[in-house]
Amino acid sequence: MIRFTLRCEAEHEFDGWFRDGGDFDTQKKRGFVSCPVCNSGKVEKALMAPAVSTSRGKEKVALAVGEEQRRLMGQLREMAKKVRENADYVGDRFAEEARKIHFGETDPRGIYGEASVDDVKGLLDDGVDFMPLPEFPEDRN
Image (tube, rainbow, N blue to C red):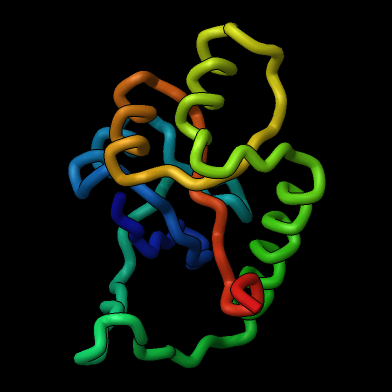
């Protein structure tokens, strides 16, 4: 999965997760990419600051954010909180449970959990709808 910073014609910035660089282009052509603020379909990739790892490989350089980014981060935190409150945690069985729901083998319900890169690729290949749940530093405390 790759994350792009995207910008609509009204200058709203937001992130989008895609299988690879070509997946963004395909989804945009099919009309699947739109601004979550104004719903505009005129969306382009914005200039992104790279995530730079230290020599230890676990720490990343932090970037300063403006008021709009803080507001959007707050909305993401609230969305993640609501998902966790209203969905079933299935742990590392996420891919298995998501497929069961997708193929009608079990009743539809909200779930969240962990998935490996191979699991994510398989779910995408199977046409299963899902999204990465953002994890914030305070979630690890």
